[in-house]
Length: 483
Image (tube, rainbow, N blue to C red):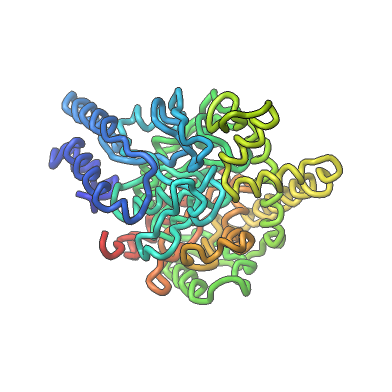
């Protein structure tokens, strides 16, 4: 049963080939057996899962149906879950049990999903390798000596290792798409505002977006259907009708205009990945797509702009973790200032501290105009580049990452080298566009992803292209040895 996709699980449950309770017990046993190798979970929720599975089976027995009714998933550990530890991968929140459910959690629970647990992540979603977690690094199931990508690496590793069929993730600069690429998954970052951020612990509020991670585009369509929609609790949520994502999967690609930016194929891209991307382009051409070279001239400024804006917003968002109301508190503080200093110094890890310092500096008097304001102007130029490109093409295609997964610890002494792994993904966050990564092949036995970007609220188009590609390739069906 562990090899089944979400779509196959839905059919199996509808045909009464197995129950949600049977499936849940099977996957919980598999997690207990295999996850010690991966460290993909922070918390398991066995009691809740079995309770939800029994409830889903009862709903089906009463005549209810639904693609997610009885489907097992897991949540990245920054989605608040009532009464369950929500740690954000940090010592700061190691003792925090959320008093309410995030909107995404509540919506998926209402649809009948079964929550198996909370997945490991880079601390406060800051990282590209899932090595900054207070609970230790996550291992890539394709090679346990390599990283799975981050910050949604726990969700990615768990799904890739067939511990569960799908999971939620969040994407601030590529944190769904990049780990999806490095673990052979399909991962989708929706348009900013498409999925509620209420109850999703913030890293950078103008960039964060929740989304689905699964093995196929079909499964991502199913999970996104349950996640998307307007939420009056979230001031950044957009009141836009949610289409039937599964209904658009089988559309023809005949005449689809695909833009390939020339800036993507620079010296920083592994030539073996470039070859796989070109192979993907040829595959889509066979399906009727029309390929056109385009330009995104301001892409070169994306990383410096992002690493001013994101830390600036993080320094503001993380100021609430002060040892007073919730989270880690130092012992025996001498006074209030000592309480703040030691609680934050003890509670936050090095990468989080680094980004808070960078952000506070960029927002400080005398530097705001020079750094933060200039970064926001660059952000607008990047958005304008995309708007001009989408006047010529329907989607944009390129690599998800410049390199395959690197070895654990290989970039720990050089944060900038790790930041450069986000070069192709962060532009979608700066512009607020939807983006998807899908499996495209292997380099040295490690997965490679191809990225698709579309205009606002065109997630259905991305899923359609990915699904048609996956009907004609088998990269997404490959399973890591031992799992």
